[in-house]
Length: 340
Image (cartoon, rainbow, N blue to C red; front, side, top):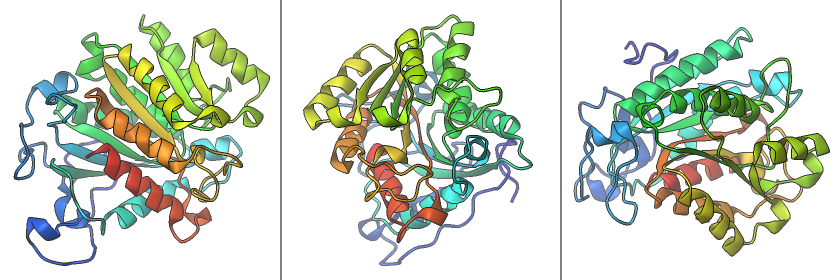
């Protein structure tokens, strides 16, 4: 079957998982996810209020309290070229399949339709072309009224996501975009070539060129893993951040709430190395300290219920370095939380 979106390199494959029954009471993710069909069947599951519609293409829609009416579409970004260029441990290109595998048998409690659009694959070292293809796919999905979730990939995934979000009707229509990164690193490196460490400086320059303010916040910065130069760049760009050691639950909740108050639509990106190495061992740069999983999960719930989530991605899972799929399972759990 040819992919519906031209920029997709691998069409979605059938999902598999444990079978307990065909009815809604026994439904699991593998039974709920279907191949993206252009939104022709984009309706919410039985018993949920609201419907998806054209308003979703212009921004985030939802009922009071943050209930989101839009269907969700997953897109894989199979890339570790940015990690390779950043001299990290490669293997993240296998992450989209690994996340789908552990997500498939989870019980499905979402009140929305979920689609799989397949994967964009970076090959031959041509990261930039892959990011452009993924960006076009994200834009097409957003403008079709979907909430989009990209499964990376190294954190070069973030610039691919940004290209798609920035070109969407919501941002082009003047909505204030905020970028919230859950990460141990700023990823503001200034390098000759794009890497997994450069995406947010690339975004800052692109936003300046478009005449927009760069609204970027990070939860979980590890001071020992970011140089003075990176902190200086963050201050110059007006980046808001919390150090990992300062990520008590209430402080994080307040930080995120204040950031959300100043934007209209949100792009959330999760670098799994924000979590302690014991929780997320399967990443290129495991965290010696990290932010506790309950705090990260609470941010996901807060964002999901804000009514402002436009797009999300999860990056830096390296299945070759994982332990008993521990990191992949965390990624799947966070994705499930974000799409509730």
